[in-house]
Image (tube, rainbow, N blue to C red; front, side, top):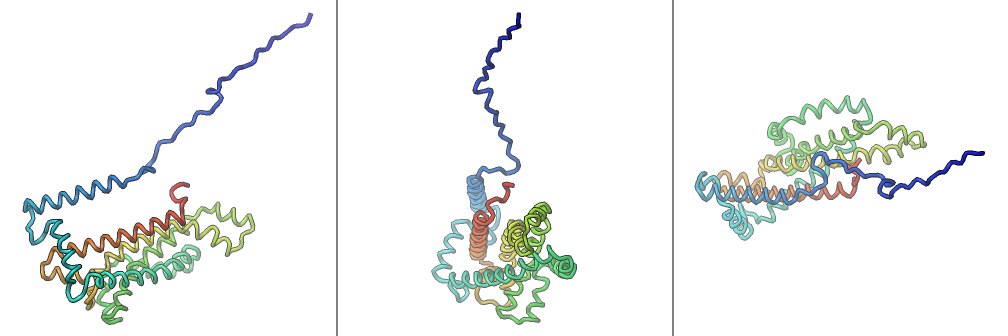
Length: 284
């Protein structure tokens, strides 16, 4: 008599068969937008400024109200300042900062990449860059005047020196942070030196390079006032310094506001460029 084994089908519910998805908690800022927080903070700062000026906690000579600064913008736009219109001041500053940034980018990125790829280049160039990079631009401003005169060349050179170092060092850091596994994988697939540079090295260093460019623009705008001290008759920095000599604080605030708006626009443009060129940044 043979043994009969009865088997019953195992029924697995659909809920038990599907894997459970676990959402990892965010780290750092996360993906949630911060625009609302920034807008509320800006409004709060303006409100605090208005309140302090309205209550007279600071002398009106040193701190005008926000509405007075807005009124002064209209006056400067209509009548100009120091023998030039507002558009002429803005265009003069934009010309200097754009030309200086173009030179710093064209020279700084290749030099930084070379320093990251070649130890001789790093050994030779690292010393002079690290020597002048911590110096404030005002410290070598007299040398620019002595060597290059009081024309546009000295102003643009001062801005180039201020913007060159962060771009160059960021490009070098981008190469140095390249994972060796990517290089070995490209070599194992038969990539030439040229293909390795354009397909692996440059894309990997691009996020650092764009960050360096954004930092350089911030430093450039900060150096602009010093650059326009050199016998200028046009420019936002010149307008600020000229107004400060006559205690025209509202005009000083107008100039500071224009520089802030221009700097924010340049920074936003670079962020958009980052989103287009390196959409993988922060996601790997």
